[in-house]
Length: 79
Image 1 (cartoon, helix red, strand yellow):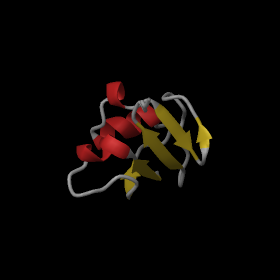
Image 2 (cartoon, rainbow, N blue to C red):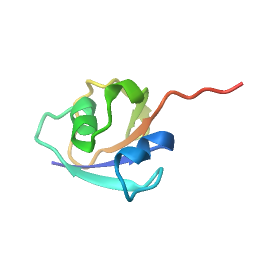
Image 3 (spheres, helix red, strand yellow):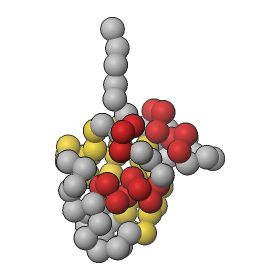
Image 4 (spheres, one colour):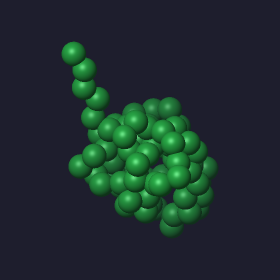
């Protein structure tokens, strides 16, 4: 199944040649989760903290569906 992902902030460095927020298409097997998508894209779970599937916050073990759009964010700090 095909899903689209966007890696934000520092996570884009895991896909050389892309920039933060660029749309990345990934072909995954049926039943794949957000964690499976991250593994396919080479993004360590330790660096990703927030996941949006079709605009809603979801856990890393959320089962994806064809044509889902996934946004992945690193921990965000500020002061």
